Image (cartoon, rainbow, N blue to C red; front, side, top):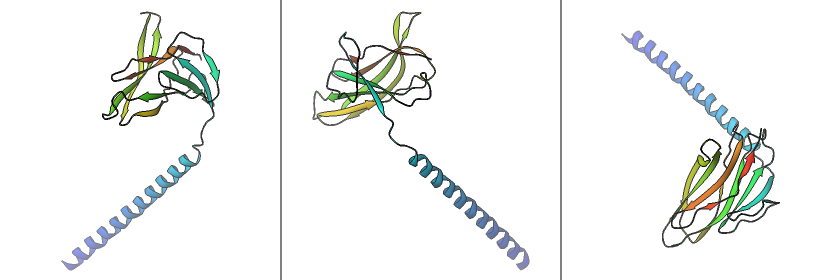
Length: 169
């Protein structure tokens, strides 16, 4: 009986050692991969296009600051293709009641020639507590050419809409 117990104990110890080595290898690979991903995450240059809610022509500027009631929209340089480009929408959100948290939502709308309406393509929601906050969203209409616009709705305030912009392939 003692030889059976010794054999079982030896086998269990060997299996535990194998599992420990495998877990160590996995953890090392994960840490190495994470470090590799962080090392290559340098900031990409930004080409800014300032858009406002009014009907005015689009003007291209570098680093134009956003202000409350307007959206600054930029296409990030270095995208894979014209279709796989990431855009950055920035603005300042003013909380109508700073004593309470405010909620806001981003929407990337795509023009539908069939229905002749703007249809929701991507959405994102967020919020904050305080008086004002600079907010940013990075939508990517990958592989889908057409006309788009960004909309920002803040609870208790008027929705701000950018002018349309075209994604081409």
